[in-house]
Image (cartoon, rainbow, N blue to C red; front, side, top):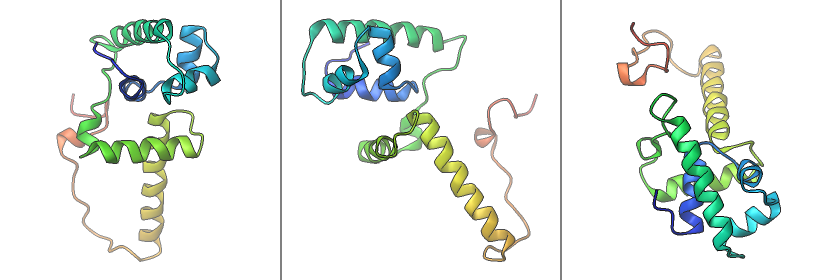
Amino acid sequence: MSVNSAEELKKLLTSIGRTRKWLAEQTGYTEATVKQYLNGSKESVPFFKKAKEALLVELAALSPEGKPPLPWDMLFETEEQFRRVDRASRRVSAEGFIEFCRDTLLNRANEILRSEELGRYPTGKVRALKVAETPPGRGPK
């Protein structure tokens, strides 16, 4: 794992669905101190070493038997899109990035379905999901 900056560390942390609070627990630092390291206002070689070790352990646990880190590049077309959503998730103090994305998508889906019920969307034929769009665990067996 090549993590050479606070920005790369934040991106990796987010990509595996972990929070600053989780990283603080794993490294033995306070959440406030972790925040300072991740936003670049403080630097610490021991912190980054502990953070890398914690993330390596977590990545090993997620793969290959567990779930792999999410492929954010399939969801976001640019780094700026990823950063905007990440900033928004922090602005509303979401539990984590994955939870924020899930909740936002579910809220939007509910809005669309409510609009459909009120006649704002045409009813009738709904296109079938492609196999790649099928939710995990719900595909053909």
